[in-house]
Each structure stands twice: as C-alpha cells, then as structure tokens.
Length: 468
Image (tube, rainbow, N blue to C red; front, side):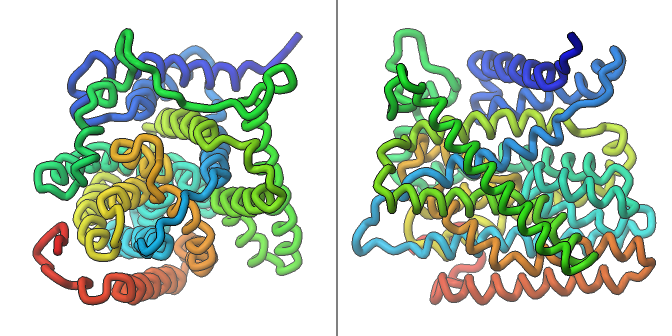
C-alpha cells in the first residue's frame, strides 16, 4: 500500500533532534549558562539536514511551514483555555492594557525601522522586505511564513524563507539577549528575592531532573482512564476549539468575498494571523465552560503541557524550514536590519516596562521582550525561567490582551500588503501609506504609555531600568 510518510518523517526528525538537544543541554555548560532552549538547538541541527542532506536523497518537499502554522495556533488555544488567576484585592498593575501597548510597540517601532532601512537597498530588494521585521520578530514564524508566502505571488521571491530567517534571528536575540537581561536583573537587584531561589536551581540550568530527584507534578487527571485518558480529553478539547476557529475564519472569508478583491486580500491576511482568532475562540469557549460550571474537567497544568509540546516542535520546525539559498542572497540587509532591531528592542522594552507596569515588572518585561523578538513561544520560554509554572498573572494577562491587541491591530493588518502593492502597481505611494500607518501606531503607543506610566513616563531617562 502507498501511504504517505512525509508527516511521520518530519515529526521523527524533529523528535530526534529534540532528544539530542536535551542531552546536549544536560551535559554542556555553554547551553546551560545561556539557558538556550532545546528547541532552538534542535532547529539549528535540522537546518543543514533539510537544506542539504534530505534533498540529496530525493526528499525535496516538506510540510514544515504548515506544521509551524498549525502548532502556533494550537499553542495559543491551549494557553487561552486555562483558567484566569485569582484576583488580588487592592493590587492593580494595568497588566492587560500594558501588555497590549507593549505588543503594539513592537509592531509599530519595528515596522518603522524595517521600512526605513528598506529605502537603503531599493530597488535591489522588494519594497515589503523590511516589514519582515515585525512579522518575524514581533509576530513570529507562523505569520512570517504565511504572509511571506502570499508576497511571493506579488513578486517577492523567497518571501517565506526570508520571513522565517528573521524569525530565527529573533529567537537568537530572545535567547542571548533575554539571558543577558536576566543576569543583569539579578546583578542589579531588579529581580524579586524569591525568584533568585528558582534561578539557583541546577535542574533548571541542566533542563532535566537529576537522578533520584523529586519529579514535579506536571498534570492532573480529570477523567477516568477507563473511559477516556485525561490527556486525550484535553487534546480533543483543544482541537475542537481549533476546528471552531477554522469555521469562524471560513465564515469570515465567505462574507468578505462579497466585498470583492479588497475583501479577499483581508481574508488572506486573517488566515495569516489565525493565532489571534484561535485565542479569541478559546477565550469564548472558556467563558462558556465556566458559565456551565464544567471547568473542573480541564486542568491548567495539562493545558500548559499541550502548549509546551506545540511550542517546542514549532520552534524546531520553523528553524529547519529556512531556505539557506534565499538567506545567502539577502544576507547583508537581513543581518543589518535584525541587528539594529535586536538592539532597539533590548533597550526599549526594559526602559518602558519598568515605568509602565506596577506589578511583576521584571516578569512582564521578559514576556514582552520574548514576544517582541519572536512570538508567544519565546516569551513563555523567558517567563518560565522566572515563573516555571506560570503562577503569576503575566501569561494570562498576555492572553487576555490578545483580543484587545487584535481589535487595535486591524488597520495594521489591513495595510500589511501595501508595500507589496507598491511593487505590483509600480507606485511608491502605497509604501509611504504603510509608513504613515506605522507612524500612527507609534503615536497611539506613546499616548497609551503616558496614560499608564503617568509621572514615571520620562523619569530618569538615562536609566535602563526605573526604580523608585
């Protein structure tokens, strides 16, 4: 019988690389010192395999791009289905609006930077090239791949691979830059004392439980295994929500089709940011579950494990899917843009977070830094160093902010194809329009930031981290 083994081959290679990366992390101090995620190591190991080894033996087509896309959406769903943390009376941090403002800061500032730097290389690169900064850094591999793939039909050869390359470089900034910020926070006293105990745990550095050590409880059963395994039930719930988000987007696509070409372009962009629709759908489903008082059937820790699985495989697959052919062609603009962007994020996110938030400042800063250089996966990876079980409300505030961010980001999403249209229509007017949209978002972020930070907005401007 002629069965397709492509999905099994991809999954098997990623799994083998993750196991090997876990062994390396447990033995090599360099990987422990910089807290390099195993998924990142696995992805870089697979990069030459998919670029050179597999094509040499006739395996030229892989579904890694599709795998990355779906796993990103699943990770958002599993985290959004978690219960909200208990409210603390008299303790307000402006968390949800602050997280949304921080996310939009990444979109706006990186779009301005990318579009501005693109002018230095025109006409040798595509006008939409610089927008891969916010797509690859602030949105992540799924969005960079999906929208970059669409741009290939608009004259951007290798658009998907260039987007994934920016996403990979963003992961590197999240990893090394994040660890530098963590160590700086410890050295300068930015980190709460109780968190330091976590940082001294050698098992966190090694990434594995020591022989004879206590194994933490990672999940709890909510069903009788004779009826259905608890993990199966949680996976089924997540996939049901994913199917509902698919139906939602399918319905929106049909409705937008009546608006003609503009509507279809918007629908295409919506599919590229399906992770937001997936999160919104999951939040609605969670509200219904709470309303019908059946929340006891879901376990937050199990949902965290589902998200962790999705994130690890997604990051590895995203790095492996990069085409080195296109990277080599555009290596200088990619390196220049990503380096300047990484430095900008490393300075702006701590500066703004320390003045804008009133609780869990350092944890929120790490989360924002991670999502501003990668996506949810890198944000959670950095947050997990400070908050291993996500017991603070930082991760839930981020999930809740996804809906607000989506509503505020609609004009940005509507405009995402404008630089590509500048190429297809031969008019730079569309390019300048996108630049104007990014500038407008920057103005909104400034106003929102001042509203949250108030008197601290520009206090001690020379200090990277504000302390009262």
